[in-house]
Amino acid sequence: MRPPPSRRADFSLVETFTTRWADNDVYGHVNNAAYYGLIDTAVNRFMIAKAGIDIHGGPLIALVVETGCRYHQPLAFPHDIEVALKVARLGTSSVTWHAGLFAADGQAEATAAADATFTHVLVTRDGRRPTPWPDPMRDVLSAAMG
Image (cartoon, rainbow, N blue to C red; front, top):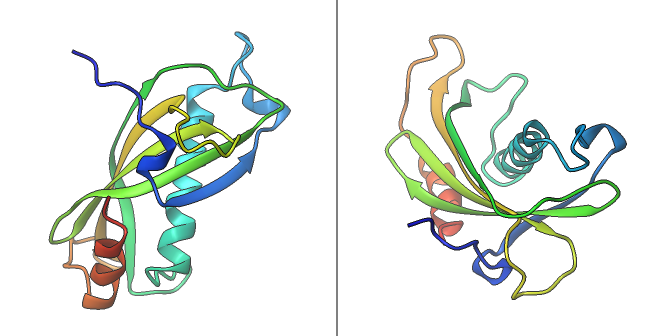
């Protein structure tokens, strides 16, 4: 049985984005690739601002190794979209995010237009080998668990 859409109230971390004309596809709604771009941007903003990932020169980087998305209802241009995040699972060197995409109307009981998972693995920049989360990063990610 397909799980029901998430509720906006299930998340505490939120980024708001404005759709662009180019986000719509021929069917008149935001294309699935745009959803992934929004999620990737929201997660990486968090990882840079809160977890301390230095994407340009740091010794550790987080690479996406798996994604998945369930679509519940369409979103379209012009509209603001909230990408709500929480950590669903925190492993030794991985983190799986649960992302809910919502029409940005501010209602706590709103249901997600899409629910997605997004898994990063922390690796060394040079060797691209998995490495455990340093304690400060682990603490930030643990605090984001929902």
